[in-house]
Length: 430
Ligand code: PLP
Image 1 (tube, helix red, strand yellow):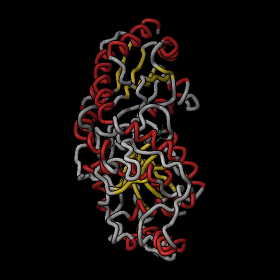
Image 2 (cartoon, rainbow, N blue to C red):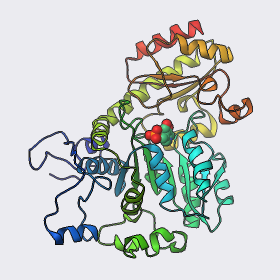
Image 3 (cartoon, protein in one colour):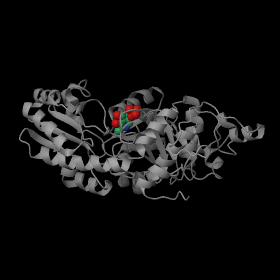
Image 4 (spheres, rainbow, N blue to C red):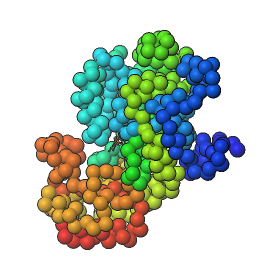
């Protein structure tokens, strides 16, 4: 059976697995094993020398994980993917794969707080500098670039402002310097394919929409195969110089028989080997269950979110609704350019009554879950000023887009009437 599917709805169900070869099992099996029997010493030697690709040890690869990777790579239009234990490890690996102590990378200021901490503090302690720039001005990426800059990093649809990142504009700037753009597409799977707009690497927290059911932490990196690491050899010593930890392998050359997978292969055989943020076979299985209905769920999430944004826009206790469907000007232009088939399911709204009103609203919700998470099938809500952003000063909160009455909603796939009924009764008490 051909696996050249192009439709995401088919890819997520069929790519990489059409019945288990041994048992005929239709669902992807959980290969709960740490290690794999080699056929003979020659086979083992070939696997270790990467003359042949195959299973060695589950810290580095696993057949359940492999199917998840193939499906995510195909869905994104990439050449290969790497599943890891969390979104955090995916963002860490995405940068570590290119940067060494003394190097820098340029990052949008509009990113998830956990990524911010990792880049601004932890990576700094390891000698890698993150230069934050305002994505509203794509040229700021060029201004922050020097000959030690190894990559650009941004999120497609970052909350709380929900302003879509100018992927094409910044990836074009990157290409003029020979610098790849890494995009965290966690909030916009299916509705945005960053590779179609020039991004080189995509990363996901699969914990969110891809897993979808709030059961399993996970992350993934996807390689577009479209970035020419060799032509910019001096910028990427980790991929173009002999690797002393792998018999002097030069990754851009070692992959020649395998395809343009230097980036993802190095992430697997060096970073996963050495740092070991491997996903478990059962979490890979859970994530596959989510992935199989992702296109269907994203449709429902996005449809419900548009209706909620409309409802909130008309409510007299709400002063402002933040969702790409109701944006205007350049923000709307970016949303229309980069999001297809929906505007995502995160919505921000500001309650006129400020802090007290925001807290009352959250406490009055009956069906929505009050959690610090996004991308669940169920509807979720949080009041950032009293929780996720409470350690910031009022000024810092405002800079990040959080006012005292700001509520973040993440609209689920329940029936729209029940979603609006819950919001309605909570707003009456806010
Ligand atoms: N990227 C984004 C956009 C996120 O929202 C999160 C988590 O909330 C992460 C990365 C980190 O993912 P994880 O919690 O799976 O480590």
